[in-house]
Length: 187
Image: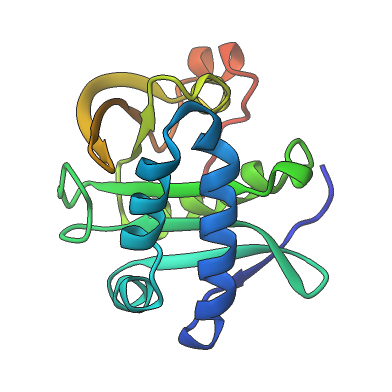
């Protein structure tokens, strides 16, 4: 995997954050959802106003290719977390990579950053929600040592969908790490 440049997103980056958020969400989910539901979600969730508010509550990071973001990460600590709101965990709310850049290590670099942030914040685990039909993402997170522990409803436009909730302890046991092809992370 190549060395990935990661940049913290600031208010001056809102237009780029909006553009990559809309593009990656559309690339990931448009083929499995109605155009009306996609448009409703993109307008509601990725407006400049909403993203501007989220930047004050959560941390966003770009993975960069030169001067352009090709992937991004959004992480939440309690009380900004969407579901659990527990002080012992860090939520990965979004890791999205442009379709043309997938498989180049950007998602892994952002996942590793989330692990490092969780360790720095004293969290014992990371967690996230992933759509049950997003098989590629579920496989990616499973390889990273995450396991399904629950589910919740995610509303896209006027449709209710099922998200799996996945969790991973910050430090994997030697057996789990070997099974998932991961090295143990220690500070």
